[in-house]
Image 1 (tube, rainbow, N blue to C red):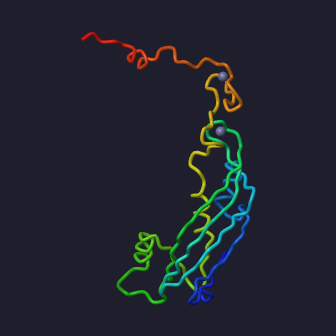
Image 2 (cartoon, rainbow, N blue to C red):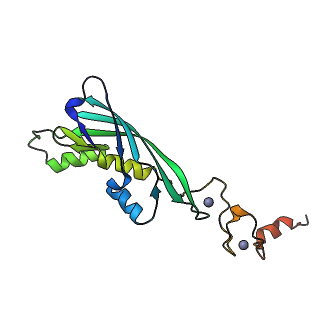
Image 3 (cartoon, rainbow, N blue to C red):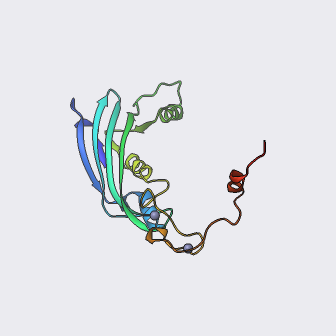
Length: 182
Ligand SMILES: [Zn+2]
Ligand SMILES: [Zn+2]
C-alpha cells in the first residue's frame, strides 16, 4: 500500500487499494482472537495532494464484518465505514543543527502529522488505524436489541421467556404512590 510521491502531480492522485484483512497485523490478531470475522476485503480509496513538504491524504474505507452483539451475543453482519484525513510530512534531508531529530519528530506527532522518508509513503499503518477505529465500541445487532433474560438467559428478541423479572421491592415506585398530608 505504497504511495509514490513522484506520481502526485498538480492534480490529486487517486488510488484504490483492496487488501485482505489478514494482511493487517492488528486485524489479523482480532480475527485470531475471535473478535470478528471479515466477509469482505478492506477497500480503501484515497486522494493524495502535495502541499510543499506535506502530502495530504483524504480517504474512505469500507469493509464488512460479522460481530457479536453486546446484548444478545448473536453474530450479525455489518458494514464498517470510515472517512479520514492523514497528513504525511517529508523528513527534511538536512535538519537544523540546533534541533535534535527526536524533537522534530515529537512536534510533528503533536500536530497529527506522520513522518515519512524517501520517495514513497507506506499507507498501511495509517489505514489499519482507520479500520480499527471504524469498529463500534458496543456492537448491537439492531438498535432496539432486547438482549438476554437475566434469569434464564433466553434471547428476548425471539419472544418473551415468561420469567418474572419485576424487582421484589422498588422503593422509588413506592415513593411515587406515597401521598403526603399537607
Ligand atoms: Zn442483539
Ligand atoms: Zn427468562
